[in-house]
Length: 347
Figure 1 (cartoon, one colour):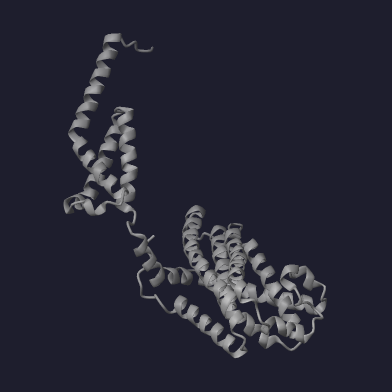
Figure 2 (figure 1 turned 45 degrees about the vertical axis):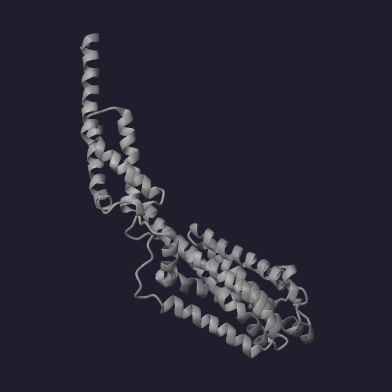
């Protein structure tokens, strides 16, 4: 049988609850106000205005707030008070457990070991991407060697110009050593950077589908290179073509290799999370791969400059190999030797 509560009793219960809530607030409000003031200053980047006592008190005030929030929920206190405490708890969490660092400090950590560490952590995926890229080059070369019509299916018309099956040695040599319009090199570099960045970003972004689209994109992109290599090889210009490509290619292809590996890493983590949950594995892989991709963009900028300027200005094959080899050596040393003993980049 339902219990009927009289109006006076209900009014008394409400007054008691209000009194209890007010007493609860008065006993702890000073700590909440102090914590909110500290958090607000930190959010506004005014950490230097905090005293040593405030910094040391932050963890204690945060734990006290969580205790107050727990009591407020269990006692069914004022809903507005609970909302306030929950909001303050969320803001405080990021200040207590989040890494507070300036952009300059982050950038220093990125270049002094964070980027290279992230690359080393996806080393297995780099090997997969490397094998796939080699296979793609061989596939493109073999297809065009078997039937030259494949060249037109693999290579866009705007990239081929005179570099097509049946071109004469003189015409092909002219594309490798011919004089270029120096005034247009800056625009050319910007165009090439944009094109290469799209390939790299796609190779990374498509990785979520278990890495399969990333692998297919790498194969297609390298098949194009294999097709072009066959055209020059037929006229005995393989060495010259590879030298022409090496100035920017050792950096550009390395960047695409890392982007593809980052995409494969994400896809592999989703498909085979191991002891972790799928969500946790994907999150960790995504953070690692995103860090690699920041570096990939930097590499593509370098490749764009090399392709738009150095490749056009250096017409000696030996010097081209020297520049390309030096860039390759630099990246290998940076990624796999440098920064091994450095602290990991703060997240």
